[in-house]
Length: 545
Image: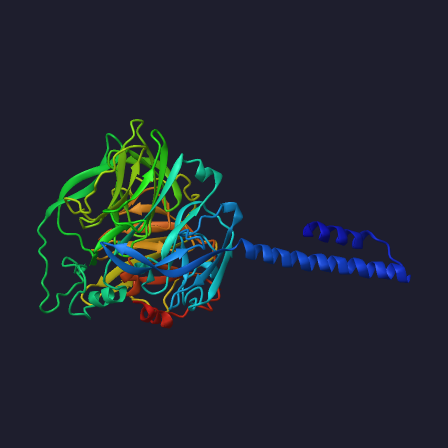
């Protein structure tokens, strides 16, 4: 209505012939007022429309039952209790975050290509959202697929301040008859700040079953006086294997030394439920089901086991790949995995299980056809899993790789750490600092991740997609991603197009590594950085539990 009003009144003003007679002058004044009124009302209506279209996401504490105990965690939910947000791509992104916590927060839209001011990183792209306040995020959507949202403030991720973010389109909806979102988390009865103090050696005892695991094989580790160093004898573990003849990813048993992990958790959860009371999803026999798996964990990588169901990887991190078959898959912290499975015509119950790297802990859901018996599932596997490696990453191929062009700039990203002091570094420096990886708009940039430690690091770059192009010296046209797991002593090279100006976080997504230094920024030449205040970053840890 209002665009037509503005167009009509403007046209009358342009085409009408006015004289100095009072009636003509009055007509000109009236038309001018009409045009101005239409313009004002149009802007006002558009503003009100945008306000009405904004989805409110409330960040609040909620109760959760884990192993028979009620605990308080955080949820990101809409007014009707819906977890997260699932907009249509063409509608754009319109969200108002309402902070109902007693401490500040922010939300980061993990994997989305957004304007820099919308990225949700405190003391980098915005100020924290104070308790009781709200913050508006509006931007066009450039992607579709499986993403997620999470707090980037302090250790709030460990408190489940996260939710799914599925960007929809007709093409996404046509991929399967049904889709199931599975969000995986790791849970500890120990508060996050206490976990961190234990890792730093500041506490003398644990208050739950969670155990801290030193890295005895790390070259940079110096044993502390009185530390009981675990033995490193090999034992049987479950690992992923590539079957060259069948061209499929499967499961095998290997002899392997213990996996270096930081925290042993009390439980793993899928959609906030443990495996003794899993989510039961009704499916139809013969139907095609798309599993959207999200690793929303703080310090746990996963293996995904589809059991008797053969699956195809259709996308990783929201980006389409050439379909890759298998039944046993790797999923690093913060990564996403879209798996397509077909339910047998005979029907039945089909567990989809996630096992924590280096542990026997399990979580998952069960796909069940009508009248099928629901099995009782064990919450622990018989064997631990081996460490994540490059078996799967080497086989992934982007469906739409970056256009070929020479690399203009190569930046080293050396990943290091000191387990004795529990400090993690990028290029020898622990954040906070004023270091940055500097790029110019329009450049084709390569990042060379070199893991100098004995732990895997899921490295995430904000504001960009990148392509994996080299793994331990072997060139590939690998997957497009926003998060890549760099295994111990491995080197992975990725490339991206510097086409989104700003200052962007680059960090390990293992929460306690991020919090103790494995964080830096990619900064475009000439951009203003009014919110970048590294010296304030440590204050975030004071507001956790």
